[in-house]
Amino acid sequence: MLRNRYPCYLASEAVQPNEALEVRDKYSGEVATRVALADAGMIEHAIAAAASAEPAMRAFPPYARQAVLEQCVARFRERQDELALALCIEAGKPIKDAEGEVTRLVDTFRVAAEEAVRIDGEVLNLEISRRADGYRGFVQRVPIGACSFITPFNFPLNLVAHKVAPAIAAGCPFVLKPSEKTPIGALIIGEVLAATDLPKGAFSVLPCRIEDAGPFVSDERLKLLSFTGGQVGWDLKAKAGRKKVVLELGGNAACIVDADQGGARIDRVVERLVFGSYYQSGQSCIKVQRVYAHRSVYAELRLRFVAATKALKAGDPRERDTFLGPLIDEASAERLATWIAEAERAGAKRLCGGGRERNRLEATVLEDVPRDAKIHRLEAFGPVTLLCAFDDFDDALARVNDSDYGLQAGVFTDSLAHATRAWDRLEVGGVVVNDVPSFRVDNMPYGGVKRSGLGREGIRYAIEDMTERRLMVLRG
Image 1 (cartoon, rainbow, N blue to C red):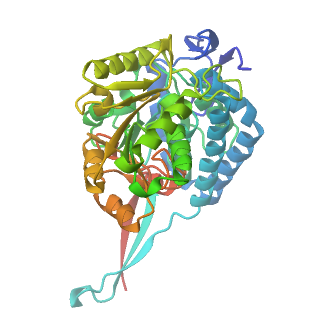
Image 2 (image 1 turned 180 degrees about the vertical axis):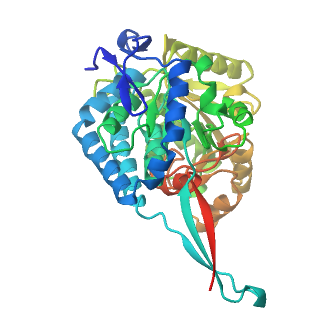
């Protein structure tokens, strides 16, 4: 079970000035625990400490950074049941999904430990003309400095890990604001970090009210802002000043099912589509929101997809056979129910689902959804999937691109020509062939285009953002 209260972490130390933040069990709605809430003074202290820790973190050698990350891996493995239960309670995440996220937390820190000692530079040949005769160039990568991280509720461990782990590997102190809806996972990470040899003041983990969070964005002592969340990220970028900004702002991911996926193949396609559509109640930036199936396989896919969706077990996320848990709050379920009703009034057909009780929404399938409906144009971030038939593969590509978002897309096809054409033409950060766009491995570059954001996560790619090239020219 969760503890009765949790401290926050200020300049590497646990502090418990209050128990002002209630964290609710997202299934029962009851208060599960209470967390210390940082005020403006604590945030100022944390930023000052991070800025002061820059020299110590820069001097903290790569092998020591690696040792810290490896220590974290060992502690996370020891506490994996506690971490999974915390996710289950604070996020309403089904226990199997929660255990999977703990595995990814371990993977992310493990990969960061490996990368910590591989941040290499280069030697440049400067002798491109006679005037540079005898000159050599050398480039090293140095930490960018103190970083600011803001993370959302849906992956309270892994999205924190994708910012914290590369920062440690790169030698950057940081301040972190976890979601006030799901702060426990980040605070447990803070507890583990507090027991390592990181320099004093190198990190702070501070749940806080939105109205107090401005310095995480605007303070000029912070050299990088990495934000994962909604479209408010663009407003934060405008307020960030001269600092580097990395944004991951969601999507409405599409999946194409080609004409050659009928027959025996269709069962696996449907299995993956159902998983991609409804895992952790669809609260993922790369959940399958739109499915475009070739007309020759559409009827069979539609039949099997709807049947499989109806068969999903919804209920208490602590039960191991539960696949569909609650949404993060009642407002999210109500929003989606409104969008579904709006689409139906505009001509969409509901094939199953749509019922709502508090923050629980049934897994829902719609077809013939108008392209201008909110559920088609915007990010659903819940258990709703749209089905549509197509006749021409190039038209399907165009339909996928008919979106303001571009995070990831999936293509089920046996045609190498179609796979590479999708890779060339789809306006997304990543194309997943013969699986759903929901697929992610933690060392791959991950991020989007258009309204989905800018920059890339994935340990090595995040380290690139958290370091700067510094040139030395040597005259022989």
